[in-house]
Image (tube, rainbow over all chains, first blue to last red; front, side, top):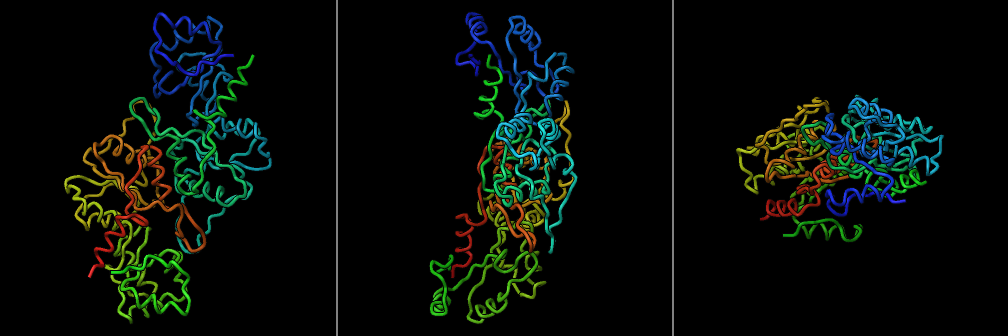
Length: 240
Length: 240
């Protein structure tokens, strides 16, 4: 099976037909390709309709981990595009699939520096997530005799875009990675910035991931674009 | 002039006298050397008294940027040690001195991801600081038509340890570095962790600095240990 991994030459009216005929599945980025913030990009519905009419498989791949596949399907629908959850591959789902494929023990927990999407995908895959939005309001005070407790059963820390990042979460994730033997450090992606609104770029998951690299002196396993995990997983999923 | 830059051999009762006789100034780290959290380390007052009685110059160097020299002098006094502000070299002061030595324009502003110490040292050096603790309570909502405004007059972003780190500050600093022409990115230090309390290690400035590296894809100018700036500045200051 061929998967279009991005054009190696500019598309023109002469060669676009050849491209469409020669591949069976198209992977689309979402942010800046399908939409910018909450605004649909011109020409998208027509392009998708054309590809569907030719029987092509479509996969929508986004590094944004704030939503789950279910939440992304809802966003597509709100923009007037009909997309099935199975056609969506967001990095929150990628994190859960990485753990599943690698037989992460069900009795261990996963600490999340990130948003709701990661927790939802973890739960759907049968894992127990901690942290996330709930820890966004927690604070710490660096005073004598202050001991920060963390769960020793945490076997993985998943870090994604987190607009409620705080020192509490950074310390929690850092302690798990530094002190829990074998604890995995998983990054949904390392994008520097993203179009979180339609007008401006904002710090992406790369910001939170690098913060944890800074405090742990460790490098993460990246599960979103452009990781080999994501491409291997998709190719398997799309295999005929 | 000789400055003791750390022992190249283990000190023993045989050679400690030679070391003390052979150098004129001693640089001490604070965190883990003078104190742990707010607890004084055994033997410190006696050692300092002995060195002072021999007429040695003492300099207390700390990468912790949360306090100013004035605030550190107060901490020394609260632990029963008499230290002059001029003997203290904290990385908050280093950041201000870096700007001064490099003739940073007075009309430009400095955005601070960090705590009170940096703002106080900037002000003492005649610079205008923005951000810091004041921005610790600010939030953002990533919604359509959301445009984050930042001051175009910011010519430097100083990043240090910040227990009130949030997405607002990360976006502010990121925008200044990415969009204000020539804006400097200054790190007080890149320590992964520090003894912010006496019982445990906590994420250090390296965590916040790397977060900004992640969102800007730029490397900072480091002014604290182990930067050449700090050693050159101290050697000049201590020169007879």
